[in-house]
Image (cartoon, rainbow, N blue to C red):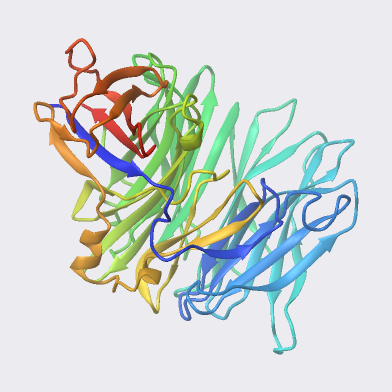
Length: 492
């Protein structure tokens, strides 16, 4: 059976009123990360501004923002400039403890001539109330020359015992890639580690649920692509083993990349609902599909056939996944970014937000796109627990601004059924039905921008101009008079 899902591509924010500006003049390619304090709900954003836009043409640095009122206003706690011209910031990740101590993992080019990266762990805190300070508490072992450190992921567990987890990939020009998973029980001063090897690691992601850490990696090795999960007990450091979740499917897909993982938090150990999302190139269309699999028993067993979040992206689709608890149920939020058209540039970036419950893990709900479609990275998820359990998003635009947007700013109570229903922005129509378009003068395009059919009334029966049923895929309906666009995904 074929269904059709459609929703408006709007330039309005996902939740009213207008989004909150966190910081500007940070550069179009600012790298940023976000986390929150479980106890207070304070939200923190660490950012490495794009070189030459914030600290001047010969400097780079780190800026730490905080909101103590659930994202309504933001302050800069720390602006730390680095003056060494031959270095440049690369990636950043952040975790926050219950006592408002901030840990930031930061990679940078140590030397433009040797192209060797280094990785630091910074501890940022305000011990006396007189001002925030930053100290380097760890510098990871210096990697070989001509090495690149990327895919930095930092996690923490501070419910029972305090543990930090840091994972990253080291790529050199002579050897296989090395994936490091480091863990510390003394707040980052000393580390144990495990190392994994592959011909090429595409990307990694971390998440923690209860006492289990999940590390998801996408890799290429000996001619095929794969997705692999590692598990670690956060209390004992004992490995939970690893599982090959999926490999190259030569009949339809290849090039697995951009993994993202998130888990619910309230189930007993090894019993969480875990989602793994990844991008994979379609062998027939040569476009990238955003797929997911899930486990309902803490990663021990996974769905054998991946489901689809988005089809036919022109570039690798990326996502951010987090689980949260809204008693008595658990939910999972996801943001994802796909590139759906090269012929319609004003909707080149499509950024969406969805949520699902543990009781119905395949029932994803669509929302309007996160913003106007000019983001250069995926919107990243955060929370503010004392106020509500719904996710908020932080994103950047191509003007060098960081923005915050959240459902609780709409004034709707987020723990009500009404609030849940108000977020649903999708409609499923059986293949044999007609779709009301809402315009008397509209044109249907396919994902490449090719005209499929001119509509003379406000109904599309899923046929082309010759009266033939269209194939599954992504389509756009454009109102000729207003320019309003509707995106439609016809899927099997």
